[in-house]
Image 1: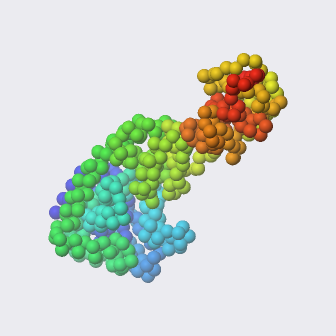
Image 2 (image 1 turned 120 degrees about the vertical axis):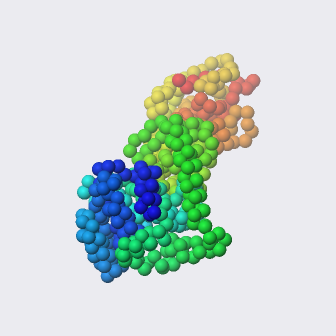
Image 3 (image 1 turned 45 degrees about the vertical axis):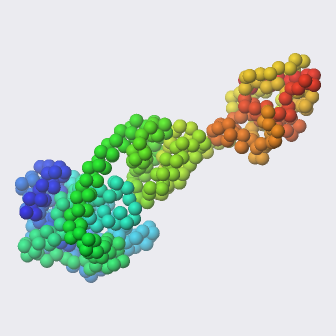
Length: 457
């Protein structure tokens, strides 16, 4: 029965092909011991070669040495080659500021990948079972998770395969018992300080009070969610491709308008995929981070958000950038020129010219690049510069003064363009934001006798 389910899972998820070399992660516990024996029993039928990998995490000291001997004994009995290594996980966890479980998982999978490369294995088999899947679902539900997290442990991801993901722990224990094997017991699996243990030993028994088949129901829910998730994931990939602008190492640029045209769930998945492409994982990324980006996508202002793992999301006009490095602010081109009336000056920093000419006729210009001011209100020379902190003026048609910063915001002038707006000053007073608005106090009136024409060229 167990062998049939085992082979059925391998076939359903296309985990193995003839001539595959499989690295088997064997800890010595019941799950990995069963995995090893099932793969060994089926290797001729599957046409595969096997290699065992065992890592001593240096956590359980004397017990860990007995684990090593036990696994070596299994390898010798089954005539399967083995690689054993030791790594000081507690020291690594302390150095990196990680929990023991997270550090052990990180080191363990890095070890499997490295050994697989050394022995030429193209698949890595690990012993997760149906109970592990149910426990993972409940843990993620308690912590808060989207549909992808609630899909549980994937049967297959990259080189990693989990042929026992639909087999229950009780079936595994019956199987190793029938083989007259006595697997190693990790007593830390019964310590309540670990969340998984609390879920397995306390929460699930409580849920069984309400329904004895709760584990089977949760597993079925996981499978249904996985189907729904697969559909949504394919749509998110399509949306990501449509929004793509460019990419380079540690950076991805997307078109904001093309993101916004999709339904909100697809937008969220798209953003998660984009972040994962830059970050490499989605660790510590939560619902709130994604919602913050979605809210900012509608902003006309330049914005930036800090995400976990040193990732930044930044918006500028209609472009979204996901980057590993904080977007560098463009170097500010500071300039300050004196312009005689009449006269012309080149503003080299912004590639423009400003011309002042004198006339006896007053005009009203509809061209924002041209302004007419009262000559009597000006000094002999004009100062043309870029904005300074605290600058104020009275926009034409208004009564009270306004900060240039507030004016730019009201007019929806992008932050990166504001230093390119020449400020024309006379007598320490702003008289014109070239190309945008005249100061009300400098306007031509019926009493004006001479007019100065200002042109931004």
